Amino acid sequence: MASYILKPGRSELEIFTRKVLIVITFGLALALLWEARGVLVLIFIAAIIAAGIAPAVHRVRLLWRFWFHKRLARGPAVMIVYLPVLVGVVLFAILVLPRVVAESREFSAQMPQLIERNILAPLEPYVPVNFIRKELHGKIQLPRSQVFAYMRNAATAIASVMAVLFMVAYMLVDAERLRNLMLLVYPPEVRGDRRRTLIRVANRMSLWLSGQLLLSGIMGVTTFVAFLLLRVPYALPLAILAAVGEFIPMIGPTLAAIPALALSLLHSHWQFWAVLAFAVLSQKLENLVLVPRIMSRRMSISPLAVFIAFMIGASVLGIAGAIIAIPVAAIVQVAFDEAFVSRRERRQDVDRAGTLLRKAD
Image (tube, rainbow, N blue to C red; front, side, top):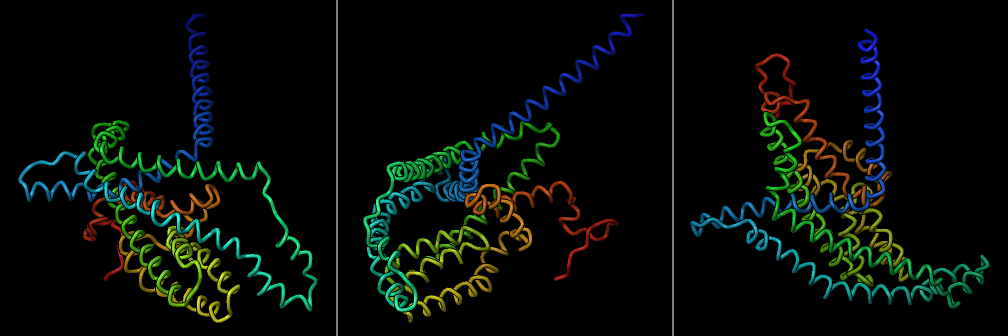
């Protein structure tokens, strides 16, 4: 009888110990993931790019079967689609990047003379500016540690780009295997539904990536042509900055316009007002015409969800979090639909009681 009484106590202690160990293990896993958040962001970016390219790979395989009546393996199909992307990246690094670096160096070398002529000289009768002039014209040397930090950041950026390109290729080739590996987490009876959910997420990522690249390309080319017509110096780096700024929601285009405004103000006043007018007009055109036609119809995400996702991503992961805010919001939206919106509600089966009604077209 005594041994019977001790057994429940021993089992409760064992259960409590197991729970404590699970909590500790879970906490250690979260801490490890937080320490590796940079790598996780790169993996997530590679997954977004791979999901965006995957439908093109599937389309190439279908067209190959239609034209040649033969089955094309996934590896060659990935090469057909992904090789032009790699060639484009290499051509950009060889042809465009050196010019951007050269123009940036030229701009940094001319900056003291521009500030002297356009800011310090007009302000000198009213404000003492000698100490600023000494700082500008003095030989400013960066500390060795800061130079090493810049070199380390540049090497890290190059290594990150190479790692993302490699992971994208691997994810595209082994897409089915990775998808099946993720489905093993779920019970067999729900794997079909989860597979359809993953396909929906991949299609949503493809729509976002294609729309974002199209929008970024339009704004980059438009900015480059406009700055050439307005004779704004260093038009290519500014246009690339404008194209990259399109990937940051809410504030990206505005932040990308600030260097162009500052540079034009240092050269001439009419260029400043012309660049300001172009920035306002282009952003209005983007918000009223391009984004509704390119992004809103593809993503179907409310502006409030985009704003909340942007604030959370920027506060947690900085610029990287701001860039991946919309894809994360799209994934959360798909997961919410699958979890809380039934199929009859998604197909608008309004004849059954309890179905959520949608706004009539």
